[in-house]
Length: 210
Length: 413
Image 1: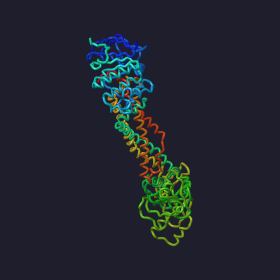
Image 2: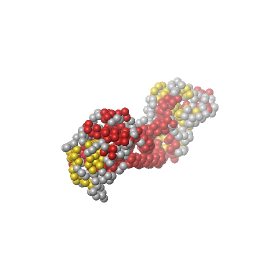
Image 3: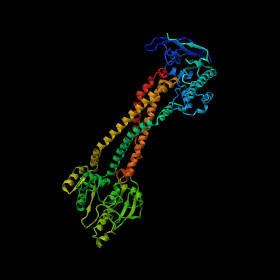
Image 4: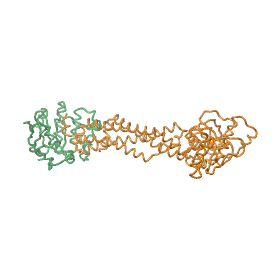
């Protein structure tokens, strides 16, 4: 088993407790997290990424219990091993496409030469030196996927990655995520309520607010 | 990619705000730099020019004016004194050395100073070419004056009456250059030096009362030490005195001020009085500079704080791709410090530039002998001070960067 969680619970201030179904994924496997708005899908994703600390439960990636890491250790572990893709691309505006990926390498202390290769794979090779401000929504999302992939993470977590894209771009993004995750042997979890995504990936869990 | 490069990218991403803050800080620091430079060099220069002169004796009037005109050659002379009276003082046992001077003429704004060879010794001048004057109308040029007028040994020129440019010319007898001095870095650089006789004879001609006998005097050697020889009643402008003993400092000024029709003034006393008067203006400028620096510090704080508010997403993204809280704090401090470092460097350069500007438009005044490209150790303190401003301005933004919750920021959209 590459990536698993068990017994995760979390309470937002002033709300009732959320408890989440357990997850277990092996290399190259994909899974959707479905659920209505406000059911806590994104909270689960934040817990899995170590961005929020659960009240109980554990998240194990490879050999590491990420709940046992703290501070800078956790940040570095996340940078190296977890690739995050968000609803909005959130690229760093002052930097070029390539520099956005270089920043991810710098903070994860990785020095591979894969940036150009990955950009090419994602069809963004010709924009490597372009400012990210001139990119279309679809292009930006592809760059943000490239950023999530650049350190060859063990798990990729994507939060509604297609919700602001048109059909064509949405399909492309899902195919890219699935294809690249398989290629580098990473587990892939996509949080979504987008029907277009469900057509591609069969494996899913559902989050219900009790 | 590294933190420094990243912070630089963010700074250059908003060039106007960055530029304005750097400029504001630079202006404040430039004023402080100019003040530091002027204070340092002016006092040094003032003391250097007055070195070896214990007392100045001249016609009654403002003592400060007397010092400025006869030591620094910037103000108008107070008037003339009778040579007979001057010679009486020289016989006092309290006086070690006395240098008589006749002032009042100029060549293109450069003052012509009639004196004797003791004046050359007082400033320990070196000759670049030629030799001191021996005959009437022989002159020796200061280095700066020679450079500006492009004159050399053997050249001749006519002086003008008065100490400022454009007064009527003494056309009857030309001065002849016999020597040019090495640059001294003091007041002598801007003077034309000659014998007292030269100054006298120029004015005799102007009065057109010359006789055959006086014309013969033109071909007699002049006095190289002490007072010139003459049978007529002649006048001098000022006397530079050296005391024989400390006792003279007490007795001599009182003796001259009350016992003669002349006045005595001490360069060190008058200059410290002048600095006291200027002190008010200097404090005002210093206050202004501090206000500018304060405003720029506030500006940098606001710029960082606002840009961080816009950049909370960016910070959260940086955390999500592996940056630690401390790295974000460093990033904020780096931005603040880079801004202030640039401001400090620009400020110091501007300060020196301002001073160079002041000197170039004022090439015959006291400021002309200042050197704008001397760097002081105190300027390092300006740098330290500026970086301190940068740190203080970054404190709150850095704290807010430290506090940023990634999950909250990323799910807010």
